[in-house]
Length: 278
Image (cartoon, rainbow, N blue to C red):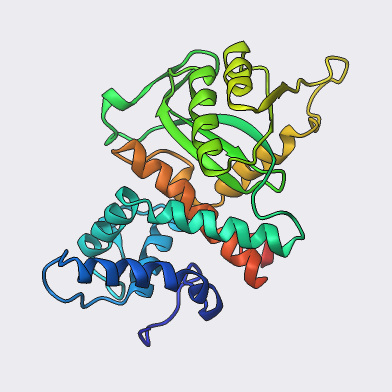
């Protein structure tokens, strides 16, 4: 760790202790396999701090402060950790720890699914975008499935034109592959019979939860509020307010990183200062 002045997004010693084993093992495995060429000169903690800085502030990679590692180096690690599933593994491990801390079984049996359409920036390739006709949004769609605590189990990023049915099927496939214990999923009316039928084939009872038609205006919808709250947590990370990623898998990683940040703070009892704290 360097002696530079800390940024609010930096990992504390306690949070780094949760993340370090996975990243250190990854670096050692690459060294043993002879991957990467020269001996790495940048501290892994500083690399992860730089990724969190981008995730939290929303800046372009090239705008990383000069007291953090070079942007090209940070992005190189980010791409490697994305393609090799390191962020996904970290999220899985920390999710288990949080569930255990709250007295739950490490692997969940129930889940909630939802999707969110977001606008994209000008650098996003047109081939990975689409139009959500219902919400009148040109961009991408994020599908997430969480447990009953709101912890991320799987994420998919597609063009906004892709139906919730297709996203729901993909989410169920990923979630059940990682968590074979899943037997229940609550969804909104955007997920139709195809998702219910596919869930049945996987051994998951998919139940559509609709808003009470007698209630006017905003109301908390049973079960679905959990995943909607998770989307709210993600929006604290400015990189996710709009989709800036050229690649959909990078978009999924940014969502996973935001959740890793949330999980690590839950485990250590820390919070990130916001304007409300002033």
